[in-house]
Length: 279
Image 1 (cartoon, one colour):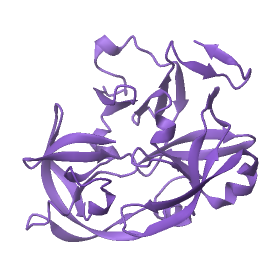
Image 2: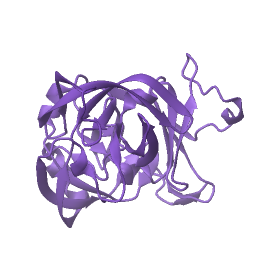
Image 3: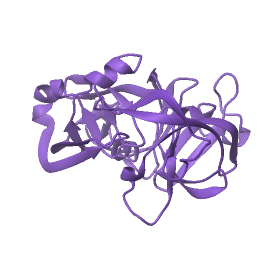
């Protein structure tokens, strides 16, 4: 999920990443005297640590302007999937904690609505557009999470807009085996340059609230180190953009709610009745 941004006058793109705690800049563009050494480290889901520098910066994302923003700086060039754009960094959760974040993949848009002190959208023109489903949302450190079920197995899953596929802890593999179909192999890379290799599967019967989602790609990865190093409840895995793009969804970290809208033209599988139900 790439968003256009201007950081310290440099135009480029940020990866919109709820798996990152705050703004993380690419050392390739911001390795100068303003970046100072720290004892900070960044951790990925495999538990690999990477040292980072720090700097104070300014950035513009659409109409959102941030001055004197604290940022970490580390090498992110390995995250580029193509060579034809400047990757300035990762836009993490804390940049947007005063907004409701709506992800509209159909229009390739991310909508940010400013919130009042109660966590409600201040824009009165949008107030009538109430979500069809409201689910409780928790936070593990900076990562929003909620509960899904696959068959009889309930899983607490983090939502990471910087991830393409789902990752699940291997301890659940046996319980999920009847809902899996082999799909090949995959290489995984995060903030650290350490690459992981795993088998890729399609996971079926993913349910959230009364909705049955289409099958998603998943690989199994040990989350023990990540769970130990990031405060909060132990997660069973993370869901990426393949899950997020199936419905119009929003994250409101102030109210700790996940919002889902159902399109009038969208065919929805209702878990309790397992039939096509056009809303």
